[in-house]
Image (tube, rainbow, N blue to C red; front, side, top):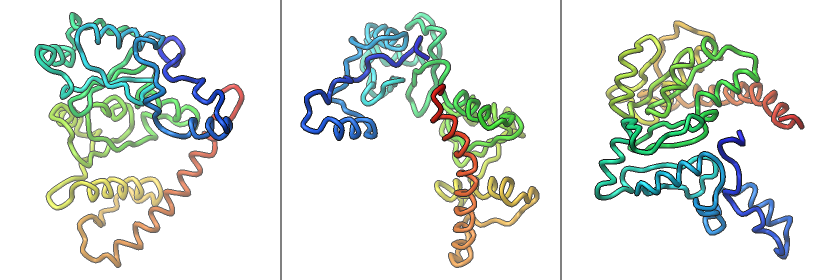
Amino acid sequence: GTEAYIGNEVDSNRCDGAENEEECLIDYEFSVGFPEEEVPVAGRSGSLWEYARQLEGEGFVLDTKSYSTCFRVNRKHQSGVVVDKFDALLAGDSSIGHNPREIGKSTNLGCIDYYPASSGKRNSCSYIANLLGIDMTTESVCICDDDNDIEMALACAQAYIPRLGSASMGDVVQRNPTKFIATFQEGVEATAATEEALRLIYDSVVVGAENETTKYAGMDNNDTIGPHFSKMAEDFSKLAEEIIAPLRKAFSSEET
């Protein structure tokens, strides 16, 4: 909400005086990142950016490029004694920057992401579930792999793991064996493990075969695999449209 972010992160007057102002605005609206037009952190308003300036005062190097509603602290970007400060920040040491209550955070691949507490993957999924009128805890699934997915995964009925992105994620999986289903194994890795997760979701949601045991990942016969995944993609597309339609209607309303 407005109490945490969305202020003057980018220069809204960048198209004033442009030869074709309408075209410029369209390009600006649908393109990602105008670093030369971004307002420095020192000039941004809101609690999120106040906290960012506090961390900069502690010596941290922040990644704010193309970000308007969050920022990242990357361990690789820090140097000297700040590296030790980063480890303390990661561990939640309150003496290293006072994290305001309205600011949430998650870790991902050696980075700390900060954003409004009302945002984040779990809250975003919960918002969509409410729009669709479903119970997220019993009627939703997710695919996840790292620390920034944990809150979302624990809030869903089932979580599929095509890879473990961190030791801490592995610990969460071990503590919640009925919540998580690992789809990776020897010979089934990377995209094949993701496809296996999608197949399990497909069988459960679209086909409804809860006890389906047929395995497609790792098969050599592309003639057998191809039609199956083609049909699966087609069904997923139809399912996605059924889900997106009410969301599109909700997001296009004046109130939203």
